[in-house]
Length: 472
Image (cartoon, rainbow, N blue to C red; front, side, top):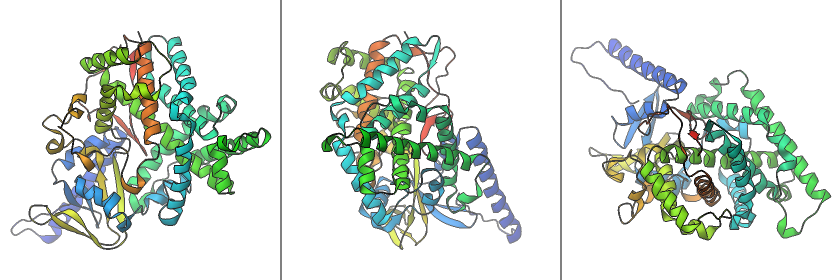
């Protein structure tokens, strides 16, 4: 963190040693917090001592960290061309290769257009494509007994639905490609890659044992997955308007390794973000029984016992929408991100004595932005920003929140899978509450204040404690 000190008569060498010592202490505390799964709580402790936009100095490097909606809008939208991904791309490439999340410029624009077309034409629009996988989830839950951890079940659900989306056909024949080996390698590589991303230019210093093997495992599985899917479609052709996501990717680019990389990029987005959101939604609902009861009543009124949930049903459930918005406010899938300055420019605020003047950002400087902390600001969300209160989204309270709420990124890099994820999460919440109206927390589960629980911070955010429940 930015450090300065002054002491009348102090020896400059002693002062410098003191500052360096403090910086090393902060870094050491940060690594300890990471091991304890408390990294965001550690950041909160330090961010609370800073203004919404502050200078950061670590080991001689200078950058900024911001929670200001105006600055985040500039980074992601109005001054999009002034910033780029920087070393983040290289830190991620070992795992997910050359895809939409690691690309900038012309390559990124091309990938986004290709993927955008696929999301526009996917068969999930009427939500029928979700039903098979949701009912499989319910069957698994019905066969469980005692304490059940919902979180791994959600990861299985979202992986299955994402693979089915990519294939455009049932997932059964590809079960061998999504077994334990793939999932364990995926989780290990994600955890290490998240740390590499946070190290910026020094990402290459962190490559613990087993990392590259895990990356090769998921790439090998995904490559074979792509080959099998394309071969199956060649052997059993379908009408052109029903060709699969993966077939369209291959038609656009004949390089199978690039197809594999794009599939991996879609998998990490489709699997991790929605599963974590579902886990956090039940984590919060079961700790707030009044909210759960209000939601249960809405579900009973709109769909009753109807299992075939459609978009019209979801659109008639504003409280469910509020529950998801509030979950994503407290636990955005990508809590902290960074951009690097492409050319010297200014951000709208953060400069001057009051912090409201433009802020000079020099070429090459990193600017980290924390959606997680912005969405917990009292001046934006009222005196109870840590409370899970879906009602705050009713009426005019947050009608003008704008860039102060950003769980799906914004600007040209707005999440392409936003609707897919929200619809799947909505349907899953409805079906579980329908099937298990008496669902409750497992005995011994602690009622922590949001942000104090242990969290996995990989490329995305998830609950390190899972979501343990009793199904009734």
